[in-house]
Image (cartoon, rainbow, N blue to C red):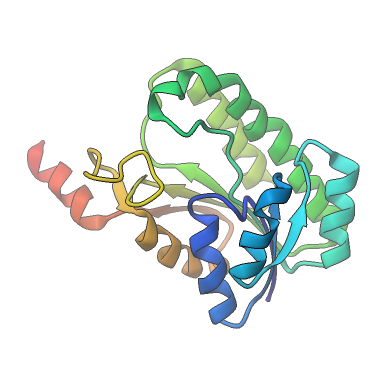
Length: 204
């Protein structure tokens, strides 16, 4: 399968690329940073340096690759958890405008499948919940798959030394469990640590 991954240099993207190429898929991985192109190439993907907000360039990049599947792993989040609120508007723009551009590029390229990263926990403010709801509806109405990931922990995440409260999943496990979603039917799928979910149930 030919897979175009937006967000290839992100915390889960860098783990997914080797898994996908090892499974025999041909991967193009997009990053906004020219400095990260070598990283993406070293992982086995064709690097694509492009800004998701540059719709014409994005469409050209996606159609030029000709993917069977477009995977949306792009977020706009800070390096530190205590700055998340400050990045609210930026991440909302990524969820709405960025996703719209990726969906349009996928349609232009004739990609048969579209997968997008979402979250499986409750957001703590109404605006963020509304944005995430709009984002998920956009993907679902386009016949895509929404992957609701639990909170990541492990190297490169906000929780490097200790896991967060459930729902949670080690980022390496999250990458591994994304692969079955390549064949999932349109709709919602959850990627979470079942042990963590069971622990939460036991506490209720």
